[in-house]
Amino acid sequence: GGAGIAQKCVEVVAQTSSGQKEPVKDAGVFGVVTEKATGMSVLGNGQDGKNDAGQFAMIPQVPPGEGTVKFIFVSQQADDCVPTKSKVDGKLVVTTCPVQGSKPLVELKFDKMKAIAYPGGDRYKLYDECEQNEFADGC
Image 1 (cartoon, rainbow, N blue to C red):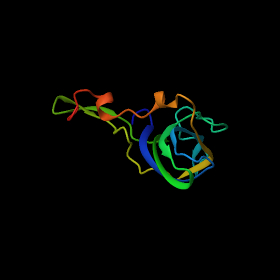
Image 2: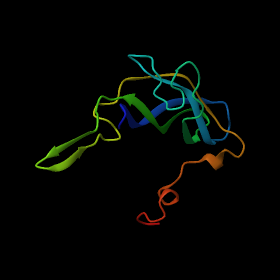
Image 3: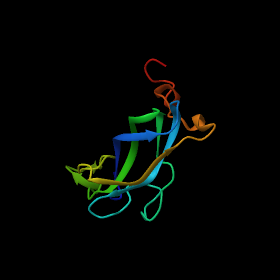
Image 4: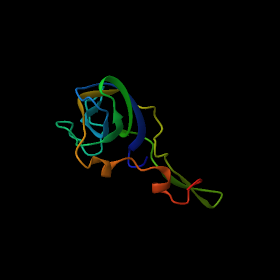
């Protein structure tokens, strides 16, 4: 949050259809995700919304045949929260905006969605808590 942009973690539940006989591991998620009301992309690397923004999430495993998967991505949306500085009783008071912004998640539209697994794609797998922070509890 700041500079008028809020970031929100979005969990997606999607129906899948795979022609593979075995589960597909570490599939990259591609497509166009826009704010339904404005048509603007909510993906940080696809702001013009005219084309696929590249891989923006991963699915740990896609089941063979018909199935359901979950994945998480970060959505960006406009937010009118503005950080301020003011003096109160002679002291500087700074008001910041939360990273997730001050508004609820906008309604999203998903287009041209696909999941693709590449040989060696596990090198792009999701980091676990200990890989992100070796000092976290239980690491």
